[in-house]
Length: 93
Figure 1 (cartoon, rainbow, N blue to C red):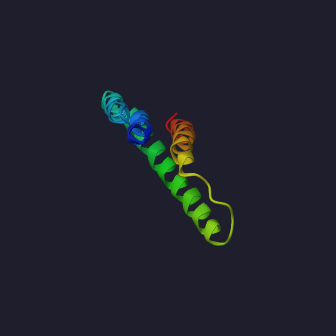
Figure 2 (spheres, rainbow, N blue to C red; figure 1 turned 90 degrees about the vertical axis):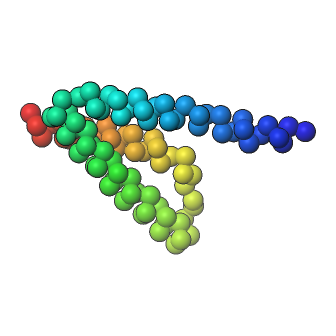
Figure 3 (cartoon, rainbow, N blue to C red; figure 1 turned 180 degrees about the horizontal axis):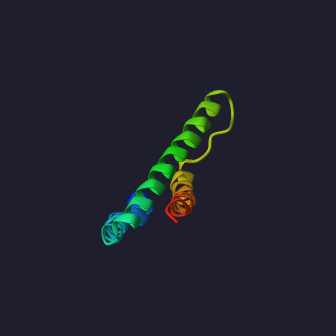
C-alpha cells in the first residue's frame, strides 16, 4: 500500500516554491527604481485581473457553470503580470 507516500509525493513539487519566491524578491530588489515601479504596477495589474476573473468564475459556478480548477490561477497571474509589464513599460517610455 503506497498511501503513506501518496501525500508527500503529491506535495513534492511545492518544496521549491519558497526558493522561487526568494529569487524573485532578490531580483526585484536588484532593479533600479523605475524597473521596480514597472514591476509593482505589473503585479497590481495581475492581481486585479486575476481577482476579477476568479471572482467572475466563482459567481458563474454558483449559477451552474462548470467549475474551473484552481491550478490555473498561477499561470493566469503570470500571464497577466507579463501583460502588465508591457503596459507599464510603455507608460514610462
